Image (cartoon, rainbow, N blue to C red):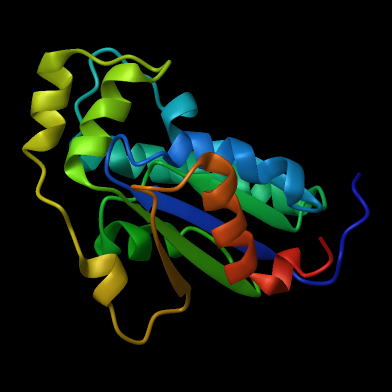
Length: 181
């Protein structure tokens, strides 16, 4: 059992494929006290991967179950990502969880040329067919434009930022978690 601090917090990382979600989720863990990391791309690998609403319902349920179990074990900061396509997905996910004290929704934004380069050079390789399929999904702005949300939106343009700079930007934007660092 981890020695908990008094408040529970959830950091959700979203963005288009190649924006750096998995990389940033991994990089945030060491500097986030009393924390657990959930990357839905790791827990949601299937063959075939349908990428339809039923699949995302399953994925959200799996992530919500892990969030709840980590919180019950005393990990009061949970970093999760790679499972939100839009605001509707967020609302469906929140219905599966008791409300933590604070939710921080970090959207990683990146120029399309840089994103395409990252997709080709990263360790987690995808096929051209997969990339073409993902590229048919239009960019959704509802997460950043939603009104009366229960989260703080933090948009980070990672186009010209290193991993270290991106993590610094995020940690400086969430003093509720990172002020002691």
